Amino acid sequence: MPEPHEHQHGADFDWVAMTGRLELDAAITEPIVLEVLAELPSPARRVLDVGCGPGAVAMVIAGVFPDAQITALDASAELLAHVDRAARTAGVGQRIHTVLGDLEHDLAPSPPADLIWAGMVLHHVADPVATLQRLLAALTPGGTLVMIEFGEAPRVLPEGDPLLVDGTWARFQ
Image 1 (cartoon, rainbow, N blue to C red):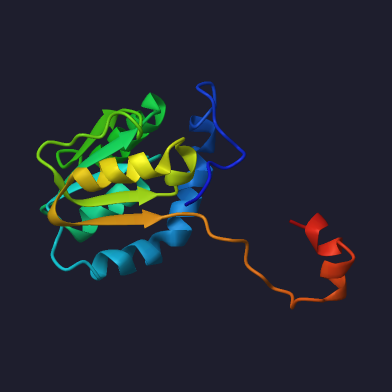
Image 2: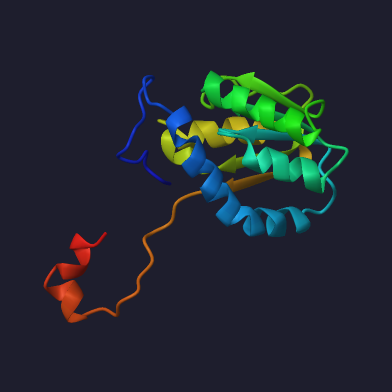
């Protein structure tokens, strides 16, 4: 189970300043999001995007599933305001609803979601097991939880390479 990572963000962290980077990350990973959505067994009708950030994934989901009602949950009111503006601009504001809340405490879409998207959020929580249990409990029977999370750093050099052995490579990471 992943441990919360070392760059814990306090209440004063400026997520708005990160909006551009978060949107760039989302643009780079959009093909993966589209691929995952294409693999779902049925179209999503009620979606919960937890830790939605600037709402890029919620916008992609709205485009792929034109009948879906999407709840975008985040702990940053400023990012949720960005989601609201982007959704209105894209003409999907009536289908993307924002909820200010903490992933570890404020989940409940009502009724339960048939798709929960949790992208790059689990490493932020103190108790990943309890959070996963709450996410699963928020699903309809047979619903889908999509979780994208950090993995190990990619290896580009073979074991025993002189750059690894002498520590040079570690200084580049």
